[in-house]
Length: 149
Image (cartoon, rainbow, N blue to C red):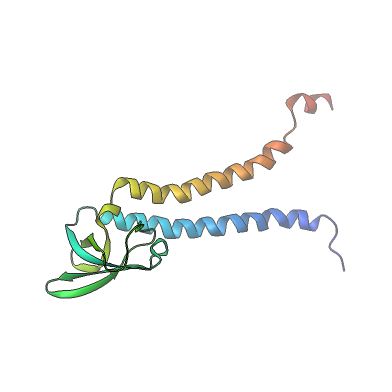
C-alpha cells in the first residue's frame, strides 16, 4: 500500500518543527531557571568555600563551605563559569539565606552572566525563526507575476 508521492512533503514540516522546537524548549528549561537562580542570589553575602571539580557547564561541580559550624556541600548551577579552577581551590560563593544548598559563585551572579544565559535560548529562537522564514520568503511570488497570469 502506498500513500502517494505528496505524503512526505506534508509530514516533513512537522518533523522539522519538532526537531527544532524540542531543543529550544530544553534550552529554555535549562537556561531560564539557571539565570533566575543567579538573580535570586545576587543580594546574598559572599561566603568562602572550597571548589570541587566536575562538569560545571552541566551543573555537576560542587562547593563545600561552613554554615553555623556545619559543613555543607552544594551543587553549583548549570552554566557555571569555572574555567581555571581546580579541585580544592578557594572560591567565593553566594548562598541563599535559609537554603544552604542553593549557591552560585559570587562572580557568576552579575548581570552579564544572567544576560549571557538568557541570550543562548533567545539567539537560538531567532535563528530558528530565520531558518523558517527563508523557505517562506523564497516561495513568495513577485507582485507583478500574480497580475500577469
